Amino acid sequence: MTMNQKIIMLLATGFNTGKSPFAPGTVGTLAGIPFALVFWVIPPPFFGVYVVGLMLLAIFIADQAEKILKEKDPGCIVIDEIAGYVVALSIVPVNAYTIIAGFFIFRFFDVVKAGPARYFERNFSGGAGVVLDDVMAGILTAAVLRGLYLAGIL
Image (cartoon, helix red, strand yellow):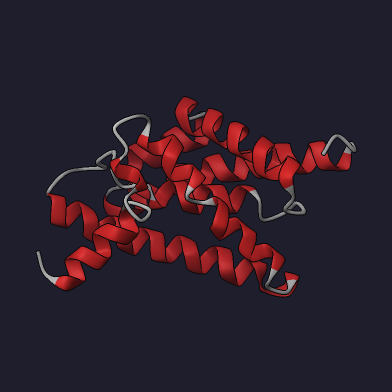
């Protein structure tokens, strides 16, 4: 494996969290927490740029990793969970409550593949097919989190 391929795989597997023998998607989502904490550092006007940039990077990395592994959406690729989780936390204040609630709600939507998420999983291939269903799970999670936040629950 070339150095570039090793870097791609390191990123695709969420710094090897996707190689967990137990629930790699769940462990990979945990790897997304530091990426969500970036919202503490960057100014709110740049949140959209950060989220879109991370999504595009995730699509590219996932596409390259599929080619390296010669496999469609292998479980070890978790950069999609990382991107989806960041989307989930992009419209609420990031704190202990939103991090924890967002984690569980995101995992629910990611596993269930509710409506729109299933559409993206079935109708897109390559990196987009790997990432966009998780982004949709992140959007659904963001909507729930925002509602809980506005209701004063979080």
